[in-house]
Length: 463
Image: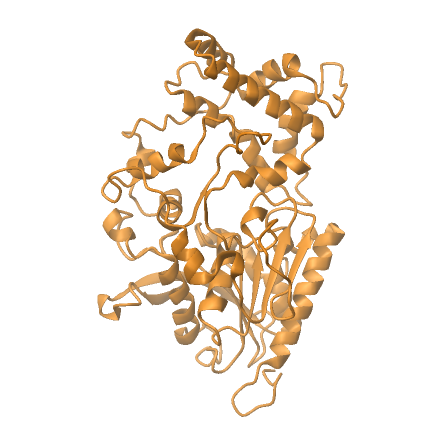
């Protein structure tokens, strides 16, 4: 009988791959061998910047991971990323602890795990890449990690599947809102931009009384700093990221409905309902918003170094390496975000969260990962790249307009018309463009697995 999917296993991972003498820490993982036959492939995933115990569903055929395992008689693994959940080398998330929280160390974790793990099933001591082909999968940041690993450590993993992989690190990632601006209902786009322009115009006028009245209208009268107030207006827009072909989009579309449907149920035309309706409608919708005052550094948000504070761990990667600061569009370009929101707004928060690391607001060193792993110029063998036109992260993927990336037989790039990482979930195949991505991914992975040559056996001899 197979153990429950939530059975937690421990792997002793190196704290510092550049200095093994520093010792190890306990890294959690989960696995199932429901479809496994001796010699079958190992389907390996890390969810990335989160507590991984919530991702045991990725062991099953409800995901592309399990689909590959089922088709090729493989086992599936979910590994918790270092510094998330409880998989942390030290007892806190202090700056001193976080110095080992890097993309390089995370890549080395994946390689060291594959080469050394003994899985908890018969023959689990002979599953390393020397005995069986491994397929590495990930989405979003972990999709980028998949791509980086195949580029940086060729020969360890037989194939990779990178969904919505943010391979190009970008400081001012104003384009995060661009797929949303282009794909959301046109009336909603028009009115969101109009309301934001109104906030900016009132602020630019220098009329502090009028701006205070506007804050009070939106339930933010006690918010001291103007940029904190307009930053909160981004909150409804972030619900776009959680959309999927099966989600229904209640959270996001309830916001648009508040702006575009009048009391008689009439929907505004593509030109929008107009500022006179949209401004008070948004204000009423916004009343329940809880706004974090980013200048008050005594709040636990800035000082909590306890294990499991995954937001802090991710902020470290944002501030030191990847950026992705989600700001207003350039002047002259329609924007859904106030012009007051510039990179310095978020860079200041990096200094506030890690004052012993940064003596002044840092500019994330995005050149380092882009140079090390290629960014838009990343090239790896046997890497399937799945993207989506309505994904807010699309402009950091290999499908970004102007990226210069091209689909090849060794690194095919296949796009759906769906959302962030939609292709990883089997049920999202209700969208035919997602189904196509999944079919293409399964086809390529199958072909690449057939090319794998076990010691002393012809290609495809892993069964």
